[in-house]
Amino acid sequence: MSDNSQLLSEMNDRTREVFRRVVQGYLDSGDPVGSRTLTRTMSEKVSAATVRNVMSDLEFMGLLGSPHTSAGRIPTQQGLRMFVDGLLEVNELETNDRQRIDETMGRNSGDVGGLLDRVGAALSCVTQGASLVLAPKHEAAIKHIEFVPLAADRALVVLVFSDGHVENRVFNPPLGATPSSMREAANFLNALAEGKTLTELGTTIRREIDNRRQEIDVLARQLVDSGLAVWEGQGESYERLIVRGRSNLIAESETEGFERIKTLFDDLERKRDIVEFLQLTEEGEGVRIFIGSENKLFSLSGSSLVVSPYMNADRKIIGAVGVIGPTRLNYGRIVPIVDYTAQLVGKLISNRS
Image (tube, rainbow, N blue to C red; front, side, top):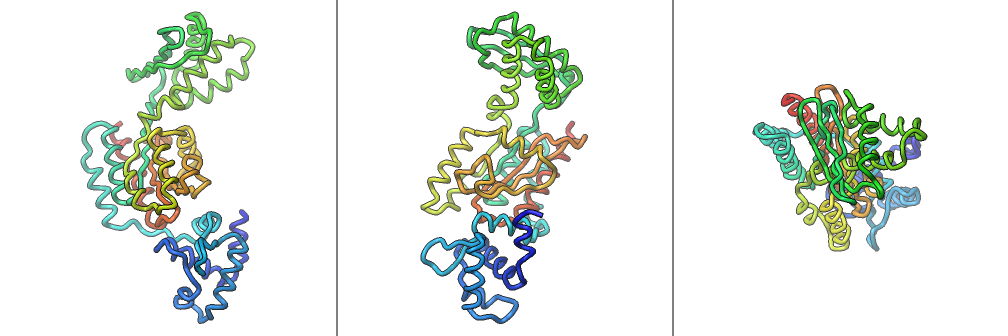
């Protein structure tokens, strides 16, 4: 049992109700919740002084905080985490939300990129947050890999897939790379690649390099790492991460939070840390919620991310959809929207293939 779960289980009914009502009140209004407000909504008749004492205890436990001289309280990041994990009531997907998403998806023409762009626009519109859509990478089996020198500091890595699809990217080879070391790197990769997808190949390569370190030239090893990095890191960011609805975040930000939102915008514009976003999608099925600094991608922004992977017909995770906004998100409404959208995208992409 986690510390938060244990803490929640040890609370008496009154403390749990005060905590839940403070968090829900803050999520609904964005304002601190005071003891007088709570006394009017509590299920049992208690005095404002009693509620204040409970709120003080919750503050001592690190679950509530006082934003300024107001007598009201707001949840801390730890408090929000505990609420989401233990007390959040996820709503049924609202009919209007479902219809708006379905209408966007219904125009099932054009390529996958166009479909996912519409998905992002629909998600940001329905949730009034910024949407993130991670497009699938090409997951057919690899047929051939080749390194082509272009200049002393530039080379081309070419991937040919079994379905005839070809991708090539320019990258910076390690210092001292020669046509000979490039051939050795390509031969090493081709010996391992046959019948494997790019994702499967990455895991195999790292294991083989560790096992056969003495057999493989240092430059060839560096070339292999450089070639893989083109697909797994910065090389893909501009093609695979679709961001829509940045302007919605401005409307949600307060003056003191504007610098955090600007930092988030800068991150989104550069589409940094896509590797971390990929990892979020590969760590398990279902919707995941990252609050504040738990979110590796946007920890400086004080934002929350609700994200869910989507799968192909073989039940392999190939991408993700998500919504990012302030920590004061309507989680009960956003979670089913993201979940439904992810499942729908997976079905549509499976049908196309």
